[in-house]
Image (cartoon, rainbow, N blue to C red):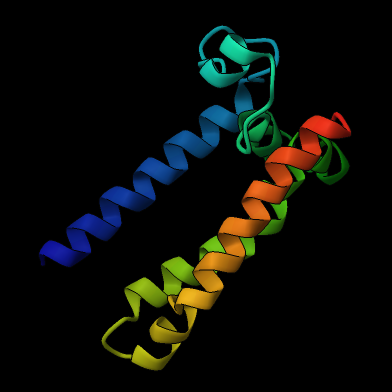
Length: 124
């Protein structure tokens, strides 16, 4: 009972936030927070543009989403797979173990750090 309630609440929240991000453009609205790191340093963090990318994706603009934050768009399938593995942890322990292998975690960290540096060098 408790697990189904949690799943229902998560789905409802995803739908609500999905609708908000679909309907309101973070690029023009003051409702959404601005990146503190960008404001303080003038450099983009790895997550800069994520809100606008999600809005673009929900409105079918894949090219625009890639322009806002390509790393997020590439990472979405990976994040979904990791969430699935977490939910299936007891049923599919080998999948969970493989996705949480130290090598994969380190590779993901290196990819995020590389994205952070390269997007500021090339103004992506």
